[in-house]
Image 1 (cartoon, each protein chain N blue to C red):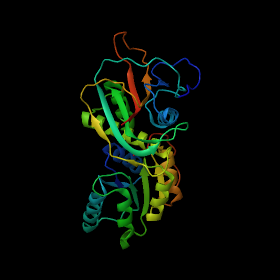
Image 2: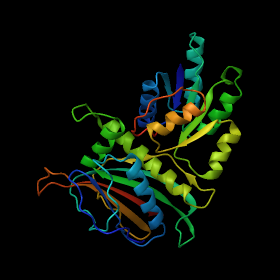
Image 3: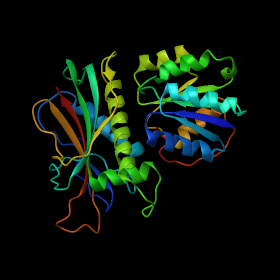
Image 4: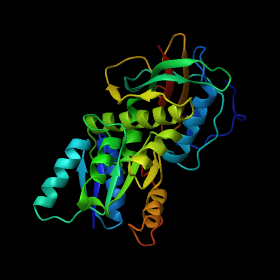
Length: 190
Length: 138
């Protein structure tokens, strides 16, 4: 997958798309396109979205919320055409998940937000990503309904056949020992 | 003016519903196609106005959006209702399938509030103006 753009200074509390890749797999360019589009149109970003920058894979310790949508029988990738089946995965730290939820539900910082809302929002974000991935692939693929898992698990997907891109937020008041708010979007092949 | 918003995602229903309420519409909600038909029947049986607009997701359990579009198109009382697919299914041939089934327009997720409202103006559901940019995807 090609990296896009040069590193740029990131405004505080703004987002960064880290054009990183975990593991080999087709579809990296498409995934970055999808994530940039999602970021530009819908993500809870303060200020103008920064262009994707290459950067280190984010390290976080907090539990995550994961939403998956199965995509079946599509050819993924501009450079590699092959049948591909797997899951579109959107995994968030707790902070990032709540950012998405507050943003999409138009809630203020002090408005109540329950865990069901957070799960539902993440499922919908995964649904949108899956639709965009499928639309970039060969006709005739299928996509399933979102499944949301909120038990603690590693943020980054691992293994062969995985392509992943991370979105992260920087925050002016974050302590050194606090995790960044991170969303990982990945294609996890079966 | 009544709008029916059908999506298995509560988030999507809330986001689209918020846009439509801001535009002055009253909103009925349902989580799938079958529930939408039941909500509609109950609303009309209670003397409610037939919806001017239905915003319909594609991928839903029980009865999907395509099935619902077909079912609504077969209803005489719904002939003047604008049926708009609001969905993450953005593959070209899926758009064609939806239009062939009777949908009047197709809005892909994510879209902005401006885009959804402009589509509704083009369909004659809404009159101008209103321009606020915020997520309107469902």
